[in-house]
Amino acid sequence: MAATPALSQPSPAAPENPSAPKATTEDEKLASLFEALRRERNPDKARGIAQEIMADLNESGSATVDLLMQWAATAIGEKRNAAALDFLDQVTLLQPDFAEAWNRRAGLHYAMGDTRKSMADINQVLQREPRHFGAIAGMAAILADAGQDELALKAWQRYLEIYPADRDAQEAAIKLSEKVAGSRT
Image (cartoon, rainbow, N blue to C red; front, side, top):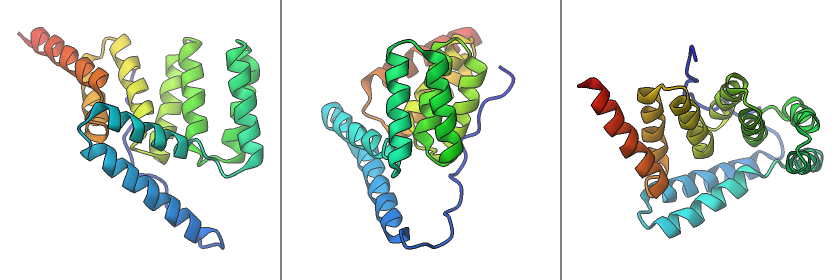
């Protein structure tokens, strides 16, 4: 893996339109949920907040996109990967700022063994939603699988800045930290 996706800022907001107040409210709700997740120390309560965040991130605001996402999920479940990719490609064309479509496609590419395409899609997710802890976990897994332990550790550390109560992520970070420390001696 030559390069790691940058954890960049989301793209600027679209010009004002009649739905802008709703979008601001949704953005504020999501920001509030991420802040609650960052502050919550109880793993069970944090998991509930994380699930609420993921539910919000899955809302496209488009019936067409929702239907294509549903078809993609069905195709993935039936191991019809080519069809699933077609549906997800259509979503990324119809609604390129919908981070979850890129995330779903990253997961599918990973499952199909194409880590290069998976990382490219993870980069797209993080450009749109830098706090997307699922995408960051995917990045950490790919980097660890590739033997890039220091970069994987940095990804887990970033994940834990967003979702500090995740015990599995804590364990993954500790194991990688010990492995990296051992390889330096």
